Image (cartoon, rainbow over the protein chains, first blue to last red):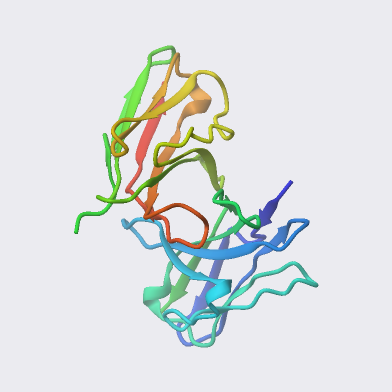
Length: 109
Length: 115
């Protein structure tokens, strides 16, 4: 069975500090990994996916198959980054997303 | 253009009653997904519709849950004989063709409270 673990329910950092939101997964094949974000009073939206190897709003995430991790990082946190972040996984060729329970990021001014 | 819309935004019902939740996907999107988010939990996949194919109902938690999609557009999720554990936010998403390569666009959700 596939599983996504986000060990931190809440992460508080000061503005300008580096951010790392942790995500570990369990899957026997080659997964597709995603980060979704939900800002206050807004809809859940895709932030980035590992296959695109993109940087969105200064965030990056690297898939580490050895450690089965897909941590989300940003070198300098901004107040507008405060939101709920969800890591999600899809099995190869699947359309079903398995989500973690989310981490609430709070950036302190 | 308009995004995914859901109605009602909030629903309070009594245990044992039936409820219907509605989802209007983005126009032209052939794939539609329902998820459930219980308090303190991640999103849980419920059901997937793709075009005229038979839906994937593998995530429905019990036979009290059913969903249909009429005309390849609007979808209704029905929960019969609601229980308190059904209280959750129900999210709908759509994508252009389905498949994980595509971005799923989420609606605002329906917050269901079963008393």
